[in-house]
Image (tube, rainbow, N blue to C red; front, side, top):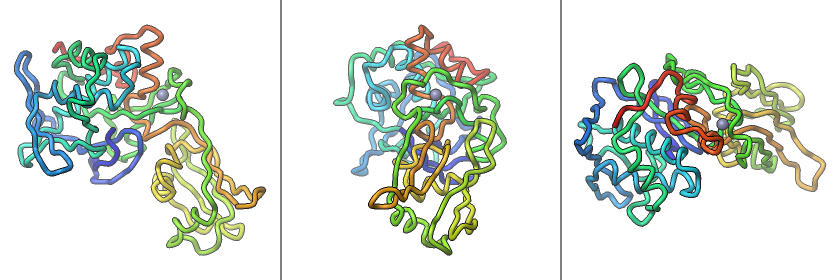
Length: 306
Ligand SMILES: [Zn+2]
């Protein structure tokens, strides 16, 4: 998982699920040459830096990103994306290329390896996702909720054609396809304390983008809107585990219980840009291969020959 990273405008977003990273300049990204090992320098949390063949690195990443019990085509699509990501992160100006946490992709080391995910890495050896023959900026998240997000909506950069939102009928079985979470009202207010000028009495959602995700939350206090903020900020403040995506359907104050709660209803888990992992699983179960899965989530791209 890639949980936090800076994108083109240097914005920091947290999405839970998988996330984003600094898009490299195209000419800074090495193109793998078939048969030539690609080495990545991995910085572990204890400060050590280990240089690994990217294929070895991926063996310790994929079983953490996805369940090894998922169908092979989904594991292979994830391997291609994780490889594309890792190679694009190679950084000549820094002492390492990747961290082992959600800052990049979580890496569990050799002990995390599983036979099924090792097979997926081997089956896709050297293969990356290309657009117009060049490297791509790839993203993925757990569940898009039925329509992936346009990267330009979430991060405000000039959209790459392959990072536009697409319909996704394949993730309906995901646990977070539709979700409800609650937060005690006093805690919800505390996390907005520097913004609220009156006790929170309601939240209106507005300015939906093409996928249906609202862009703006209007916080009401004493019956009138006192604060507006981006939904991305509200998600940050209330926590990405509670507000599981930016695709919110409604937020209501529930005063029917002994403790008053904020009830939040939404779709999907994570930022929703790029490959939907649960959707990849659904496509694989329906018979799609890895290339077909990636072409669905990244229109116009192609997998390199390896
Ligand atoms: Zn999806």
